Amino acid sequence: MPVRKYLMIICLCSLVVFAGCGGGMSTNNPDTKVPLPPGSRDKFVIAGSGANIPVTVKLAQAYQAKTGIALDIPGSIGSDGAINAVKADSLELGLISRPLNASERSAGLKEVPYARIGLVFAGHRDVADSGFSSQEILEILAGTKTTWADGTKIFVFVRQSNDSANLAFYDLIPGFRAALSEAGEQRRWQVYYRDSDMSDALRKTKGSFGIANLTEIALADSAIKPLALDGIVPTPDNIVNGVYKPVLTLAFVYKGGLTSRAAKVVDFVFSDEGRQILVKWGAVPLER
Image 1 (cartoon, helix red, strand yellow):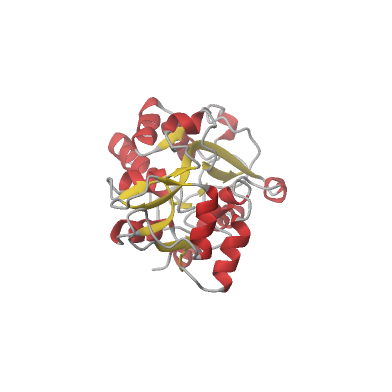
Image 2 (image 1 turned 90 degrees about the vertical axis):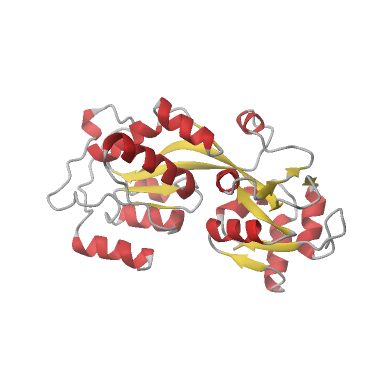
Protein backbone atom coordinates (compact mmCIF):
# COMPACT_ATOMS: atom_id res chain seq x y z
CA MET A 1 0.00 0.00 0.00
CA PRO A 2 1.44 3.47 -0.88
CA VAL A 3 2.72 5.32 2.17
CA ARG A 4 0.58 8.41 1.60
CA LYS A 5 -2.57 6.27 1.43
CA TYR A 6 -1.33 4.34 4.44
CA LEU A 7 -1.02 7.54 6.49
CA MET A 8 -4.43 8.69 5.28
CA ILE A 9 -5.98 5.47 6.53
CA ILE A 10 -4.25 5.99 9.86
CA CYS A 11 -5.80 9.40 10.03
CA LEU A 12 -9.31 8.25 9.01
CA CYS A 13 -9.25 5.35 11.40
CA SER A 14 -8.03 7.58 14.24
CA LEU A 15 -5.22 5.20 15.07
CA VAL A 16 -2.83 8.01 15.73
CA VAL A 17 -4.85 11.07 16.73
CA PHE A 18 -3.43 13.25 19.46
CA ALA A 19 -4.60 16.17 21.52
CA GLY A 20 -2.26 19.13 21.01
CA CYS A 21 -1.04 21.00 24.06
CA GLY A 22 1.63 23.53 24.96
CA GLY A 23 5.02 22.62 26.36
CA GLY A 24 8.73 22.96 25.90
CA MET A 25 11.11 20.88 23.83
CA SER A 26 12.72 19.02 26.74
CA THR A 27 11.31 15.52 27.15
CA ASN A 28 12.14 15.57 30.87
CA ASN A 29 9.32 18.01 31.62
CA PRO A 30 6.17 16.02 32.52
CA ASP A 31 4.02 18.87 31.23
CA THR A 32 5.12 18.02 27.69
CA LYS A 33 3.77 14.46 27.89
CA VAL A 34 0.46 14.33 26.01
CA PRO A 35 -1.75 11.35 26.92
CA LEU A 36 -2.78 9.08 24.07
CA PRO A 37 -6.49 8.54 23.43
CA PRO A 38 -7.91 5.01 23.51
CA GLY A 39 -7.37 2.97 20.36
CA SER A 40 -4.13 4.66 19.25
CA ARG A 41 -1.60 2.34 20.88
CA ASP A 42 -1.52 -0.55 18.44
CA LYS A 43 0.91 1.08 15.98
CA PHE A 44 3.53 3.80 16.43
CA VAL A 45 4.27 5.27 13.00
CA ILE A 46 7.19 7.67 12.56
CA ALA A 47 7.42 8.94 8.98
CA GLY A 48 8.97 11.69 6.90
CA SER A 49 12.06 12.70 4.97
CA GLY A 50 13.99 10.03 3.12
CA ALA A 51 17.24 11.56 4.38
CA ASN A 52 16.26 10.68 7.96
CA ILE A 53 14.99 7.18 7.32
CA PRO A 54 18.14 5.01 7.02
CA VAL A 55 19.73 6.02 10.33
CA THR A 56 16.35 6.29 12.07
CA VAL A 57 15.55 2.71 11.07
CA LYS A 58 18.80 1.67 12.78
CA LEU A 59 17.76 3.61 15.87
CA ALA A 60 14.31 2.00 15.78
CA GLN A 61 15.81 -1.49 15.59
CA ALA A 62 17.97 -0.81 18.63
CA TYR A 63 15.03 0.75 20.48
CA GLN A 64 12.92 -2.35 19.88
CA ALA A 65 15.76 -4.60 21.04
CA LYS A 66 16.04 -2.55 24.23
CA THR A 67 12.36 -1.99 25.02
CA GLY A 68 10.39 -4.57 23.03
CA ILE A 69 8.44 -1.69 21.43
CA ALA A 70 8.31 -1.73 17.62
CA LEU A 71 8.42 1.52 15.66
CA ASP A 72 6.86 1.50 12.19
CA ILE A 73 8.95 3.62 9.79
CA PRO A 74 7.48 3.46 6.26
CA GLY A 75 9.09 4.76 3.08
CA SER A 76 9.72 8.43 2.46
CA ILE A 77 6.87 10.93 2.41
CA GLY A 78 9.28 13.88 2.50
CA SER A 79 9.69 16.62 5.07
CA ASP A 80 6.60 18.40 3.74
CA GLY A 81 4.58 15.19 4.02
CA ALA A 82 5.64 14.74 7.64
CA ILE A 83 4.89 18.37 8.50
CA ASN A 84 1.44 18.24 6.92
CA ALA A 85 0.61 14.93 8.61
CA VAL A 86 1.71 16.20 12.03
CA LYS A 87 -0.20 19.44 11.49
CA ALA A 88 -3.32 17.41 10.63
CA ASP A 89 -2.90 15.26 13.77
CA SER A 90 -2.49 12.11 11.68
CA LEU A 91 1.15 11.61 12.68
CA GLU A 92 2.49 11.73 16.22
CA LEU A 93 6.17 12.13 15.45
CA GLY A 94 7.57 13.11 12.06
CA LEU A 95 11.01 13.19 10.45
CA ILE A 96 12.25 16.34 8.72
CA SER A 97 15.48 17.40 7.06
CA ARG A 98 14.71 21.10 6.73
CA PRO A 99 13.92 23.75 9.35
CA LEU A 100 10.35 24.66 10.17
CA ASN A 101 9.23 27.99 8.77
CA ALA A 102 7.40 30.72 10.67
CA SER A 103 3.97 29.61 9.47
CA GLU A 104 4.58 26.03 10.58
CA ARG A 105 5.79 27.18 13.99
CA SER A 106 2.73 29.41 14.40
CA ALA A 107 0.59 26.30 13.76
CA GLY A 108 2.06 24.77 16.92
CA LEU A 109 4.74 22.59 15.33
CA LYS A 110 8.07 22.10 17.12
CA GLU A 111 11.30 20.42 16.09
CA VAL A 112 14.01 18.49 17.89
CA PRO A 113 17.24 18.35 15.83
CA TYR A 114 19.14 15.17 16.61
CA ALA A 115 21.89 14.75 13.96
CA ARG A 116 23.70 16.25 11.00
CA ILE A 117 24.65 14.29 7.91
CA GLY A 118 27.03 15.30 5.17
CA LEU A 119 25.72 15.69 1.63
CA VAL A 120 28.27 14.67 -0.95
CA PHE A 121 28.80 14.28 -4.64
CA ALA A 122 29.48 10.60 -5.05
CA GLY A 123 30.10 7.88 -7.57
CA HIS A 124 30.28 4.15 -8.00
CA ARG A 125 33.06 2.67 -5.88
CA ASP A 126 35.23 2.03 -8.96
CA VAL A 127 35.36 5.61 -10.28
CA ALA A 128 38.86 6.97 -10.82
CA ASP A 129 38.46 10.45 -9.32
CA SER A 130 38.60 11.26 -5.61
CA GLY A 131 36.95 14.67 -5.91
CA PHE A 132 35.84 17.56 -8.11
CA SER A 133 35.99 21.33 -7.99
CA SER A 134 32.79 23.37 -8.00
CA GLN A 135 33.50 24.35 -11.60
CA GLU A 136 33.82 20.72 -12.62
CA ILE A 137 30.44 19.97 -10.99
CA LEU A 138 28.85 22.65 -13.16
CA GLU A 139 30.54 21.22 -16.25
CA ILE A 140 29.24 17.73 -15.43
CA LEU A 141 25.68 19.05 -15.10
CA ALA A 142 26.07 21.01 -18.35
CA GLY A 143 27.26 17.90 -20.16
CA THR A 144 30.62 19.41 -21.12
CA LYS A 145 32.66 17.22 -18.76
CA THR A 146 31.74 13.69 -19.72
CA THR A 147 34.50 11.37 -18.50
CA TRP A 148 36.24 10.32 -15.31
CA ALA A 149 40.02 10.69 -14.97
CA ASP A 150 40.60 7.29 -16.59
CA GLY A 151 38.51 8.19 -19.65
CA THR A 152 35.42 6.17 -18.71
CA LYS A 153 32.01 7.78 -19.21
CA ILE A 154 30.28 9.68 -16.40
CA PHE A 155 26.65 8.58 -15.98
CA VAL A 156 24.91 11.50 -14.26
CA PHE A 157 21.95 11.05 -11.91
CA VAL A 158 20.19 14.02 -10.24
CA ARG A 159 17.47 14.73 -7.68
CA GLN A 160 14.44 16.91 -8.35
CA SER A 161 15.27 20.62 -8.15
CA ASN A 162 13.45 21.28 -4.84
CA ASP A 163 14.97 18.31 -3.01
CA SER A 164 16.74 19.20 0.23
CA ALA A 165 19.98 17.71 -1.13
CA ASN A 166 20.04 20.27 -3.94
CA LEU A 167 19.00 23.12 -1.66
CA ALA A 168 22.15 22.58 0.38
CA PHE A 169 24.32 23.28 -2.68
CA TYR A 170 22.42 26.24 -4.15
CA ASP A 171 24.12 28.83 -1.95
CA LEU A 172 27.47 27.03 -1.81
CA ILE A 173 28.15 26.62 -5.53
CA PRO A 174 27.41 29.74 -7.59
CA GLY A 175 25.58 28.70 -10.75
CA PHE A 176 24.51 25.29 -9.39
CA ARG A 177 20.80 26.15 -9.35
CA ALA A 178 20.90 27.49 -12.91
CA ALA A 179 22.92 24.51 -14.17
CA LEU A 180 20.51 22.03 -12.59
CA SER A 181 17.50 23.92 -13.93
CA GLU A 182 18.94 24.00 -17.46
CA ALA A 183 19.72 20.29 -17.30
CA GLY A 184 16.14 19.65 -16.20
CA GLU A 185 14.68 21.71 -19.03
CA GLN A 186 16.78 19.69 -21.48
CA ARG A 187 15.87 16.43 -19.72
CA ARG A 188 19.55 15.67 -19.90
CA TRP A 189 19.87 13.37 -16.89
CA GLN A 190 17.94 10.68 -15.07
CA VAL A 191 16.01 12.14 -12.10
CA TYR A 192 15.50 10.23 -8.86
CA TYR A 193 12.91 11.31 -6.30
CA ARG A 194 14.00 9.26 -3.29
CA ASP A 195 17.32 8.96 -1.47
CA SER A 196 17.14 5.18 -1.59
CA ASP A 197 16.63 5.16 -5.37
CA MET A 198 19.63 7.44 -5.91
CA SER A 199 21.70 5.25 -3.61
CA ASP A 200 20.71 2.12 -5.53
CA ALA A 201 21.62 3.76 -8.85
CA LEU A 202 25.04 4.87 -7.61
CA ARG A 203 25.73 1.48 -6.11
CA LYS A 204 24.74 -0.55 -9.15
CA THR A 205 25.88 1.63 -12.07
CA LYS A 206 29.57 1.72 -12.96
CA GLY A 207 30.70 5.24 -13.81
CA SER A 208 27.73 6.77 -11.98
CA PHE A 209 27.72 10.27 -10.46
CA GLY A 210 25.14 11.89 -8.19
CA ILE A 211 24.35 13.30 -4.75
CA ALA A 212 24.10 11.08 -1.67
CA ASN A 213 24.28 11.52 2.07
CA LEU A 214 26.88 9.85 4.27
CA THR A 215 24.33 7.60 5.97
CA GLU A 216 23.26 6.10 2.65
CA ILE A 217 26.94 5.65 1.80
CA ALA A 218 27.62 3.91 5.13
CA LEU A 219 24.71 1.55 4.50
CA ALA A 220 26.05 0.81 1.01
CA ASP A 221 29.11 -0.85 2.60
CA SER A 222 31.78 0.81 0.42
CA ALA A 223 29.78 0.36 -2.81
CA ILE A 224 29.46 4.16 -3.15
CA LYS A 225 32.49 6.46 -3.18
CA PRO A 226 32.15 9.91 -1.55
CA LEU A 227 33.97 12.65 -3.46
CA ALA A 228 35.81 15.65 -2.03
CA LEU A 229 34.46 19.07 -3.02
CA ASP A 230 37.04 21.74 -3.81
CA GLY A 231 39.66 19.63 -2.06
CA ILE A 232 37.66 19.26 1.18
CA VAL A 233 36.90 15.68 2.24
CA PRO A 234 33.52 15.13 3.98
CA THR A 235 34.89 13.62 7.19
CA PRO A 236 32.97 13.81 10.51
CA ASP A 237 35.60 16.20 11.90
CA ASN A 238 35.26 18.51 8.91
CA ILE A 239 31.47 18.48 9.34
CA VAL A 240 31.63 19.18 13.08
CA ASN A 241 34.19 21.97 12.58
CA GLY A 242 32.19 23.54 9.77
CA VAL A 243 35.00 23.06 7.24
CA TYR A 244 32.77 20.88 5.05
CA LYS A 245 29.65 22.93 4.45
CA PRO A 246 26.99 20.84 2.61
CA VAL A 247 25.03 19.21 5.45
CA LEU A 248 21.47 18.38 6.38
CA THR A 249 20.12 18.66 9.91
CA LEU A 250 17.84 15.76 10.82
CA ALA A 251 15.05 16.50 13.27
CA PHE A 252 11.88 15.14 14.79
CA VAL A 253 8.75 17.26 14.39
CA TYR A 254 5.70 17.18 16.63
CA LYS A 255 2.70 19.32 17.48
CA GLY A 256 1.97 20.94 20.82
CA GLY A 257 3.73 18.60 23.23
CA LEU A 258 5.43 15.24 23.00
CA THR A 259 3.38 12.22 23.97
CA SER A 260 4.90 9.98 26.61
CA ARG A 261 5.92 7.29 24.11
CA ALA A 262 7.33 9.86 21.68
CA ALA A 263 9.37 11.40 24.49
CA LYS A 264 10.85 7.99 25.31
CA VAL A 265 11.96 7.53 21.68
CA VAL A 266 13.56 10.98 21.61
CA ASP A 267 15.28 10.28 24.94
CA PHE A 268 16.74 7.08 23.50
CA VAL A 269 18.09 8.89 20.43
CA PHE A 270 19.96 11.33 22.70
CA SER A 271 21.25 8.56 24.98
CA ASP A 272 24.82 7.26 24.75
CA GLU A 273 23.53 4.19 22.88
CA GLY A 274 21.58 6.31 20.43
CA ARG A 275 24.54 8.59 19.78
CA GLN A 276 26.80 5.61 19.12
CA ILE A 277 24.34 4.32 16.52
CA LEU A 278 24.27 7.70 14.79
CA VAL A 279 28.05 7.79 14.58
CA LYS A 280 28.27 4.20 13.33
CA TRP A 281 25.98 5.00 10.41
CA GLY A 282 27.62 8.20 9.23
CA ALA A 283 25.73 10.87 11.19
CA VAL A 284 27.05 13.49 13.61
CA PRO A 285 25.00 13.50 16.84
CA LEU A 286 23.72 16.83 18.14
CA GLU A 287 23.34 17.95 21.74
CA ARG A 288 19.81 18.41 23.01
